[in-house]
Length: 340
Ligand code: NDP
Image (tube, rainbow, N blue to C red; front, side, top):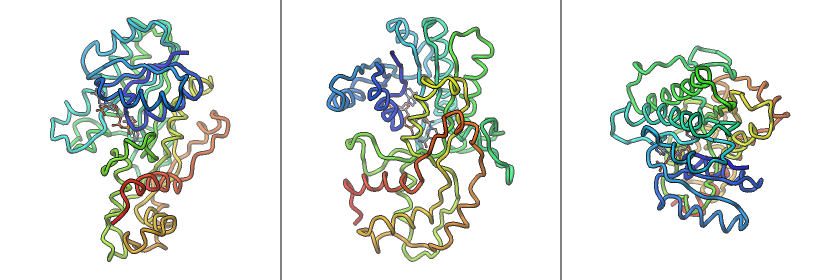
């Protein structure tokens, strides 16, 4: 069974590809260039000597017809996992061009290519986000049918632009299947902050990918502070769980058209400090302690949620605890960049 994974060189997508190869799927990834995918092909070939992985170049998902040739050439693609979307900050570019256009147009382009050249595709999974679910109404319990009320005219910075881009891209995907006669089922994965190790050690850089980079910021909190400054509690989930929920809709009919809002639990800076100080004795004295007893109360302020419907459809799925998200990221990071 052949699966196309867009943005296959990304942090999350590598974990998705790993799961697919482990389960015997044939994987076609898309990447911006050969130099981006070549090291990955080599690393997977060592890991899965019999694994079937190849790449197609899609240099910009936002370009009209970006995916057409991929489907014209590979008429055996049965499943499509669309993970590619702009997710880096500090770009210093027009916000619409940097976030909204590639996110929305990339999604519509891949769906149009399937409609025109991939009638054999049965399932599509689009990587959306909790950004598309989050509603700031106080005490609201977020569920798999909750939508972020944000509109593009409210966007005034990169983070809000990213958040809005995810909502608009998911909406575009859902509108597409309503308005077009398509042969496939559409599912979305809506994870909050994705934390977890890099699949391959060569991806461990001094600055990690956007979501893991937040964990590193906590290591830099002023050691004399008794309450860390950055105390916005939010939700997180382990990258392995997010990857699993990309594959589940291909194997479990109950999830084939689900909006899979998933979460491992709440997280806040003080909790990260508590875990780091407890689990990594070698960093004692190098990382702030903050006010350890305040973590529990702070965690209670995170967005409320109820994902029991998705957990049930996923046969009682158990998410990896947030503590392990933190130790997996930092355990790998400290091997390469020990704290000074
Ligand atoms: P990455 O930046 O590591 O992955 C994004 C991938 O998309 C990269 O391979 C990137 O390629 C590719 N991409 C982005 N824009 C374009 C474009 N215009 N043309 C071609 N390729 C493009 O981030 P993540 O792995 O964290 O994110 C993967 C998905 O998960 C995204 O859809 C993101 O929105 C979603 N998500 C992530 C969360 C998180 O906390 N990490 C939370 C919720 C959702 P390149 O690197 O070459 O630019």
